[in-house]
Length: 135
Length: 123
Image (spheres, rainbow over the protein chains, first blue to last red):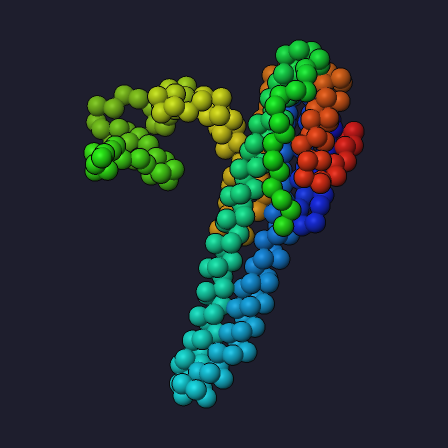
């Protein structure tokens, strides 16, 4: 079994190729936990709670003169930040999924070719697939 | 100019899933239904082939579903997407040692293009 790890800033990709008992397993995984926690903590907690609690109540009480709005502003800011975080995260994952699918297809195709040719497959199967930029 | 109202409706991913699920439920609810519940992989392949989907991808998708890589946890629901992108397939046939070396070369070239350092370890 061979395992490849590509670790760069903010992302980790692992590729596992295992071959035994007449079968070959190809597994590719990218852990996005770090990206998600950073994004949601920064946007929802940092921006949402920070601005919502820091600015909302003073504006609600002093400018608008409403206790209800003083409470509603932080909740609204946190809600908006959370929805924005989800939208950003979904867009990033969609982009990465496409690249991972392409990389996986290319890897599987190479493994299939290598199995079929008994380990003498060539490496000239067109240009390499694009990995998503690390962000 | 082509009238857009004459174009056939194109269904999205969620709608396709819902339509197939509902059609299966309706068929099973029919008193005359003789078919067992659910759809076999072969039947799915037929449907996919008619829809222009390569059966290879369908089999790969079925394997991924069976392996449970798409199960959604609380955190996945919270963030609205997968936290771990996993692609897995089991191929028949063994990869010889020389094949491993070639695969290493392919993945290294794919990764190097974008400045990623790949470290291979024999486990």
